[in-house]
Length: 114
Image 1 (cartoon, helix red, strand yellow):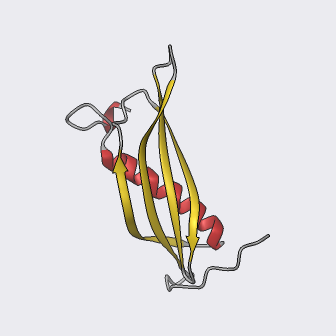
Image 2 (tube, helix red, strand yellow):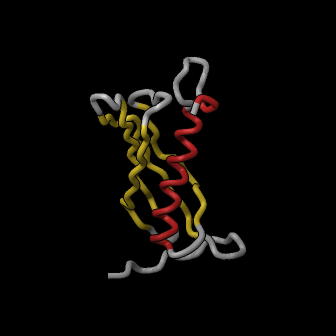
């Protein structure tokens, strides 16, 4: 939306970062079967700007599970130019989340369900 643009007229990078964190947190929450918190942004690369009017999609995959942590890859794609649609990868990131109990204390990530 226009309210989310930076001085150059592209979507503000912080907006993209926030949504990457949400997407990663969803799959980490599912895998941990409970509350998680972001503890690290291991890598974050903006490949292309996101423009007003782009349809943006976020894809997240668990790539590593530790005793209390879950590392997630998030890829972001933009579909642009409705008259001749083009899909481009605009961002990729790797984040680590830690599983927490109700009191906010680290807990073990349960074994994967088959």
